[in-house]
Image (cartoon, rainbow, N blue to C red; front, side, top):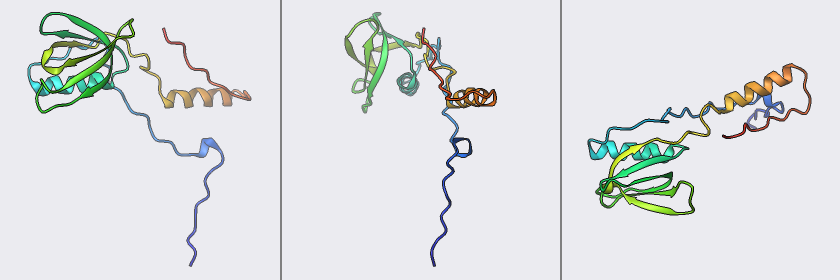
Length: 141
């Protein structure tokens, strides 16, 4: 016996969509790094953060930039975080064991932007009778 198939809606307003991912507000946060686990958790959040962070190393030097990679290891000395240094083309790797402090110092350029916001603006323009609706991305500061 043939199995019934449900036709896919052709109207985008009828299509299902999944809710967007909610990002934590991390701008300005200075996590407590009292344990190895707290450091690892903070660096995972820093990896997901879409802005710059400032790492203070145990020798007192500071490195500000965007974390693009992390390499977990069995110990803090074996694990590394890699970042693009702010306002340069330089990439650096810092061992977790060298890190004394972490600050989410940059602004998150995508904060507050979401699929739901885009859909709301689209529906408002459609309800106002606009045709050929194009939503332009907002300018980043």
